[in-house]
Structure formats: structure tokens, C-alpha cells
Length: 436
Ligand code: SF4
Image (tube, rainbow, N blue to C red; front, side, top):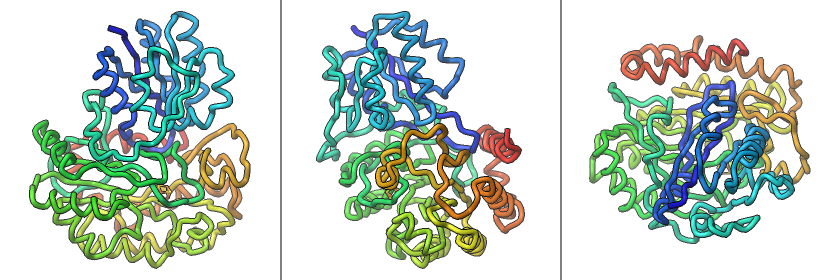
């Protein structure tokens, strides 16, 4: 039986971030096992000491999924593997696609696979072509669950939920694809790829939730880019969830324009406690300059509806958007404080490789990559050195000097029961604020 090592290399970031399982690798492992490969999965962070482990493992193939920051590190890893072993090294995923030209010239890399590679690569391992540009599957209704034996305790979320209990997390992918064209967004930062929306069969997802429940899972995060994007199927799933009454808290992320009272009611009945919204800004100018396709009124309305239905609301914001001024940021800041979400995340506008703005402006290789902790390129009217200060002020004012602080205090029992994960968050957040 041939042995394959699958390595996920996460970027090392200074901004707190919780790890979301890489579904593509989960599916890859599932299909490799089906083809009788013996698979070792390593989930590592750039520079991790566990990399020494890699040198000791004997395998026929090393499949590496690099992050955008950890890419040079992964190239070194490939050189080390090739230096000591006869194994084949395959780079996979959207970051490998972004660096395709460079990888093709790299003698240490035997193959590069992207697209929905996870479904085709297992069949091609014996005779791997240099480039595998796997087409997106038209239909993912029956792909079932990924191999979750590889996603154990390493994965959790910090998003607030409601029930006072020790959380046991489960992650589910319901749909893939996003039809929108926000200028900054690309597959390198998304859970799924492609513009065409495809979703799993709702009954199949229910089966998966029953399985998770049998494992003791009580908090499930749908990590789709936009859980509600396939309206019809999402609503069918919500109906089925309501009927099953799982006593599980569900969390999802979506766009503000997919939220209305009817949907909020359905989400509530289905057991969702938390909704994360990709708001990005409450300034119409900034939203327009990001090609977000929504206005600030829609964003405010979505938060208000969700608050009215007593959801925990998480909002993702972006500062430093093209041509953005301090006044735009102020508008976003003040509106955020007024709307009182439960958690905010403030990122810097980053034209991700492969994004519409990256292609349009023909942005070349950038030395640093960031989203929350670096400003690789500043297209706003705000000086680069001021943006990190604004981000920290935003956080400090929101978490310590607004009503969010009292909501955090009220959640103390949840924090205590889940101290293990929240201590990581507090430590990472303090380190971030102190610039360590
Ligand atoms: S930011 Fe969200 S809505 Fe916009 S393109 Fe990316 S995934 Fe789609």
C-alpha cells in the first residue's frame, strides 16, 4: 500500500485567527483512502517545529497545500523532502495556482494541482502530470462529508453563541461558489472556489449533522462563503433543521443582502444562534469602491433584523479601501458602535492574488501579505502608518469602551466553561495589540 503525506501549511499571523478546516484536503484524504492509500495528515503552521516530523516520514508522495504567506517556507520544505527522499512532491490549492509559473520552474516540485483537484488527484497519483487544472464539478449534491478524522481538536471558532455549555465543534460545508465579484476577494482566502453556486443535498447534510451529534458535537459552523447563496436549497435545509430540533447551535456567514425577516425567522427556528456578516463598510463610497454590490442601508438593515431576532451578530469590516478617507472610516466606526454587534473583525483592504483588483491593476509580486496584520499595498487616501492605529483604536473602543464590554461580561459563564479556547484568544489579542 503506497503511503501519502498530506500537509496543510497555515500562515503564521499576528492577528487572532481561528483555524477553519480545509475542506478540500478533507475530501482529498477521503478519496485517497478510498483508493487504498495509507494517508498521514499534518496540519502545521509555517515554521512549526513539527516540520522535523516530515523529514522522518517515509512516503511515496508529499502533497502540500501552502498558504499565501507560508509559500516560500513550503518551497524550502519541498527542497528538503527532495534532498532526502525519492518521493514526489505535489503542491495543491489556490495559492499553488497563483504561483503556478514559479512552481513550474521549481525542480523540487513534481506537480501542481488546482481547481477542484481533490476529486481527481487520487486517480492521477501513479502518473502525475506536471499541471492538473481540475474542472469544477457541476454537481456536488452527493459528495457527502469529508474525512473528519483529520480535523480533531485543532479546529474551533471564537464567534459568540448563546448556550452556556462547553462547546464541542463540528464544521460543515454545504455549498461551494460565490457569484459576486468583490474587488478584493479571491479563492486564496475562501472556503470554496468558482463563481457557479453548487450545494449539497439537504438530506445528506442532515445525515452528517446526526452523525456529528452522535459524536457529542453541540456547535456547528457552516463555513460556506455565503451560507444562503443557494436560496432554495438553503431554505430546504433550514426547514429540515427545524423539524429535527437538534439542540445544536448553528453558526453561518452570509452577505447582508441575503438577510430579511423571513430568512431570519427560518434561521432562528432552525437553531442558528450566530450569523456572521461580510459588511466590510458602512460608507457607501467604500462599498462602491470595493464593488460589494450593496449599500450601507442594506448592511444596517441586516444587522438590525438579526438583532431583533436575538441572534449573536458578528461583522467583518475592511479599512483602507480604494480612495477611502478618514471620514469614510469614521462613518463605519460610528455606525458599528450604534448597531452594537457582538463581535467585530477589522481587516486591511488587501487585493488578494487572483482578485479582480489584483488583475485589473496588474499588481506584481508583493513582499508581504496581510489581511489583518500587514498592509501590502495601500490604495486609500489614509497614510499607511495610520491604518494600523485606526484598526487598534477601533478594537479598543469597541471591546472596552462600548456596550460590547457589558455583553462580554454577561458571557463570562460561557468563557469560563470554554476557557481553553478563550485563553488562546485573549493571549493572541493582547500580543496583537502590543505589536508582538
Ligand atoms: S467577499 Fe464574499 S460575497 Fe464577495 S466575492 Fe468574496 S465570497 Fe463572494
